[in-house]
Length: 270
Image 1 (cartoon, rainbow, N blue to C red):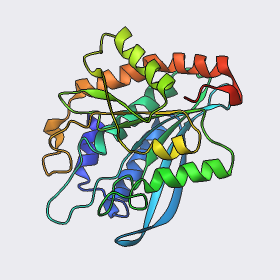
Image 2 (image 1 turned 30 degrees about the horizontal axis):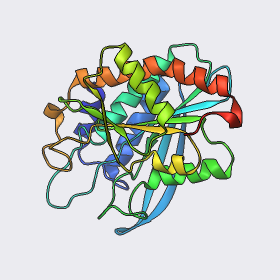
Image 3 (image 1 turned 180 degrees about the vertical axis):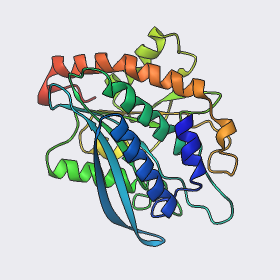
Image 4 (image 1 turned 45 degrees about the horizontal axis):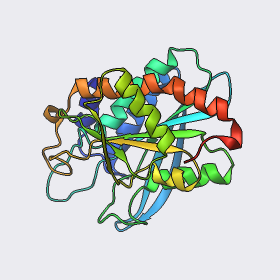
């Protein structure tokens, strides 16, 4: 919650803004505090508002083996002209959770290498389309595919701070990976927050799915203040963040075991 408070204090953080740069600096500083190697991928993107400078930030926690599991989320907020949008949940909650995961994972011995990926430019500048959305994740997935350095699996979190947390299974996500997360939720008694119903949501996991990476999305899209001035700190719950963090940390050993058992190119994809 303290991370969200700091991010909200920066104000609206749309891609290309001075506040987004301040958020990046904060993310990088917190990752270093967690003993993560910080990588910043700066790039320029053509948008309906012209060419904008954006940057993805990745915190690398090296393990005993080079195989990578990525946990990602976006840190930008949607651009609005007619009201102030601070994105406590939509942009804030994913960023805060990743920073806390970096701290916890950084204090543990690790078999796999973890990348905590903070994507810029997830939000459309105008209307969502194939070219006006997911700027940062599209850029990162393409670069990692080009260099043959894709992660073995990817988990994306977005809008997971809702006080009334209810996460549905995302329909295009990789089933075996989603199953392991939902099994962890049941094991911990959090099944009331991880629901059986399915929905389709296009988000930063999709470019990685298209690149052949098993990926799953955790998102609570039933959030009335979504993209309104009401997405403020009072709508976010520390308990919801705790639940999602506990489930992810409980699921990771099973994910590692599955990837190890199946091995390299034979890892389950569907």
